[in-house]
Image (cartoon, rainbow, N blue to C red; front, side):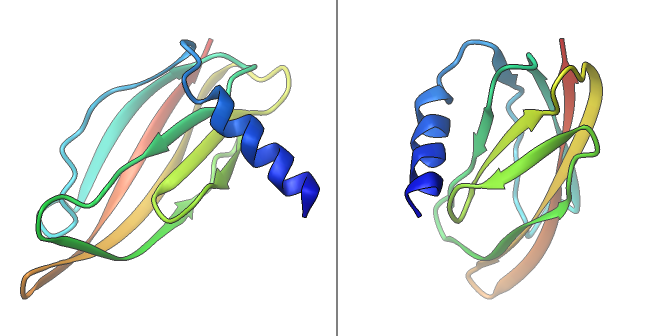
Length: 119
């Protein structure tokens, strides 16, 4: 348990690292079937992404739908994820988050694909 806590604290401490840039996207699980975000990072950084419920939204489930092939993804809470490239791996990678939400009487699910470039 202490090992996990140490890693979680390390990841949170690194999230402000300037070597991870995620493009902004408009993400509405009840209206978008799929959106993509561009990610640029370096091989040493943990790239933390998170999103929150907008007015009237209530997430019913959020999960990793497709893990990266050239990196690892860690879940850091309900709507927070950290990506890290495998050692000595540069180039392109991707991973996908699936989110479902209720908005009033509407319900929807959407995929959020992160298209990663590791420089």
